[in-house]
Image (cartoon, rainbow, N blue to C red; front, side):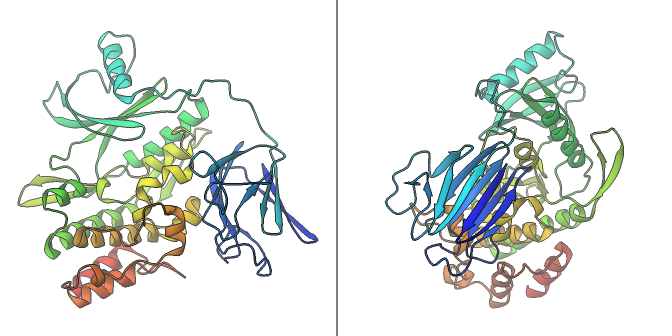
Length: 428
């Protein structure tokens, strides 16, 4: 698919073949950057959510609005709109921003042949288990497990505590239910990414043991973390942690990231050959993905779901828009990851770890998200609140390090988990 941009007498074509986002405006970081002379166009005017052959557009609270075929989007001035501010686009649609016009051309618009159905994850899990016990499937990783209790669920998945009957070992059994039918290419692509995650072995990274797919449901077994997430711990502590506790959790997280960012993992390509990838970026570090296990007085931090959410979504299995999939993570996401999620570097994980430390200490995310404000626009435009504005008693050296670590333009520093870990130790 392509977008032809006409501003004045000039025209340029932007072609998209893979899932991505594209920011449009006068800002220098925009994927489609309009001239400074386009005074009716905001620096961050709108965003395209691209999943060929599907394309959606979202206004980012621009001054003069985003118009599709002459009608304003929700979030635009005078725009009532529908669908939460995201508008599905089709071949031939015209988007107007000030005096600039963008024409949508879809060259591979294949009609959907499967209904838009999202099975309930819990039902899918019980069906899998029943089928395995009846010998109707070859789900050997699931057969032999006894479900004990549900640990949690999200938009497309559910996690159960399970006991392996042969050994009595407690494990977490996680399912992800795809949105509708699963093509072979999407299934194989996602399972290749899962194989990378499964190869990670470190004290501070949750270990995956096995997994597979049955119909539209993917399942995994991984180690069980008995004390829940850092988010749970902060709630139990009354809304925030002391400096020593929060820093100890952060240092362990950074040890896990230091390993993962440099790990050599085998990657099986679509043609069956195997290559080696150096380093994995998590892309979704947040308190809910930092789990605790071990002894109560000396808990071990483990990073969960390394790359799974991103891989599941990029394979088109979640049914979410990218901006929608970001929703629960935007408070812990740097600007660069929103602007160009596809080429996220390890520094994005370091920004997120620093944001988690900020949250553990203060009970608040680094940025304010006012009611009614578009969270994507907040991330793009608003700087973090200095941490001592929220917690004046925080030691100055640690506060300065946190504030510096949350600067994400022109770049994020430090650039390695090891460097950030050393800096935190010096600040203490």
